[in-house]
Length: 165
Image (cartoon, rainbow, N blue to C red; front, side, top):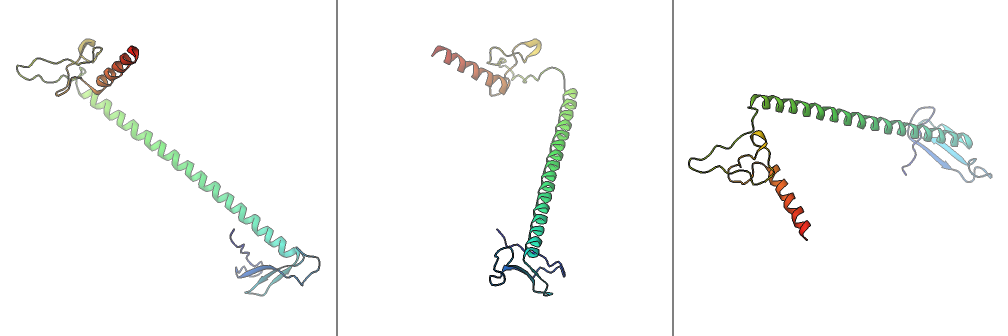
C-alpha cells in the first residue's frame, strides 16, 4: 500500500509526517500518535492526529469510488455509442443492398454459356435457386451454382456416410 500523504489542515501543504512517539505517552496508541507539518510547524497529538488521518482516508476512498463509478459509466456510454454506430452502419449497408437489389433484375443470375458447350446444372440435387424453383446453372469452373449449395451437398454427404456406418 502506498504511503498515506495527509495535507496540513493549517497551510494545506503535503510535506507532512504522521508517526508514533513512543516516549510521549504511557498509554500507547492512539495517544502517542503525532502529526507534524514540516512547512508551517503545525502539530496534532494523540486522538486528534488519528481522527485527521481517518478523515483523509475516508475522503480518498470516497473519491476513488466516485472515480471508478464515473469510469464505469463512461465505459457503458462508449459501448452504447459503439453499438448504436454499428447498428446505423448495418442499417445503411442493408439499405444499400436493397437499393442495389432493386436495380438488378428480379431473376437470379445465369452464367453466360460458352458457345457449343452444354449448360452444366448445379450438382446439388435439391437446388432450387434457378427460375421457377428448379436447379440453377453452375458457376464457371465449379459444379455448384453457389457456396450455399456446395455446403449443403457436403452436409448431406456427411449425414449419408454417418447413416451407413
